[in-house]
Image (cartoon, rainbow, N blue to C red; front, side, top):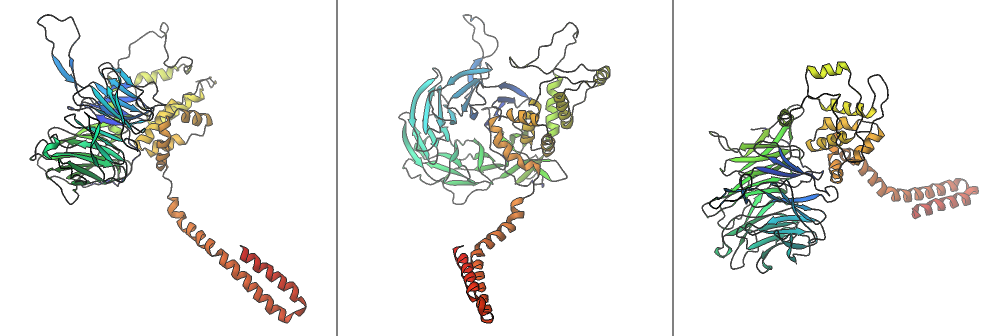
Length: 573
């Protein structure tokens, strides 16, 4: 399409990753600390897990483990000549936390597989699986790398990587080398835990590491790429046997710093490396290049893609692109965009059949329609049984010690309206329902004592910040009840506070810096000349008094004394 959205910078990225190989699942860790796993086939929520310390020890990084061999079907007693069908499926998922522990989640169990603790004294920044053995690596702010044994759940080896924090890790496809990065990039020999090579070239913290080829380093054909924060270049490095690999050989230009990188490796010189990079500004850049030596000029993307939605008028509003993945057929792309609480998953074709390849593509999508379709699909699967209200007991959800809200009995007219048909409520109607529930006014005008339910406001506030909905945000902030505001803020997760600060642009405030700039410069210029003007004022006053004394000799002494005082005050100031 020819429509291009205006550039925009989105808040800090949250941990998210597609599952390996078939890309069947998408793992997301939102601000509330919950792990949500979405199915890319059904576009619905597959599993949800809430860690016990999801508020105090939030998730900082996510990494899928290699596919494991599991037997399909229910387990039963083995027979002599019975061999079960063994299939590989995605199971384990590693979660690094801010407290220094690593959680291993199992999709088969639907619960934690094990907890790895005691290895780090600070927050975990990156986690990486070994491709073959049951080993696991983690890097932390304590400048150490820990090698874990998943069979025992204990630390196998721990060594200091650098003076700065370890921000990224990557294991080579053959499992013999490990890349670690902070301010510099080091390549470790996993057999001896010694530095094999060291690479320097980034001025800021390195956030992305990925191997680009599967060939051994003795053939001078092992490449890997790196990306850093506040850096609009992706650098490609070549590992040479003679050690002459101090500088990068290829650079890819980006519009903003990289956040997520997906790469299809090259197995031969005749096969190009395909790269999909999601940047901070929400754009996706696709590169294709043959790694056969150094390249002097930075390479531009083959195609740039951005997702937008139309909110007001015909101006496209950029939508945050969470992550992207390249499909095996080299033509399709798997995208995840929108809100972390309810992302939109879409498989699109980069170049449709019969059309020329476009350098810039803008996908216009209606997020409200996509969200409503997913909600309707989920609701349609729920069947409510018909029970007798007089003989049934209602169990209210909640924690022990918390009272459930007391709802007034619906009138006959309300029952008839509910029986006539159901209609999905808008955001304004939901807010009115929350306010009515908080006020607790019954049908007869009597006041009913209720416990305030501010969870709805907190959820709507998080949705407004995630989806960048200015209308929803303004509607929520219009409430003037002090207890509603206090309890709503208390229910927002800690990491949401910074995101709430970044969402102040939704209020559409004027640019005060540009408007007050002239006033600031005027005040600054006047302050600089104030002292000089004061001295000039004293001198002029002294001159005028001397002229006056020539006419009035009887007041010479008084005027001269006053002039000297004024002149001295001007010099002191």
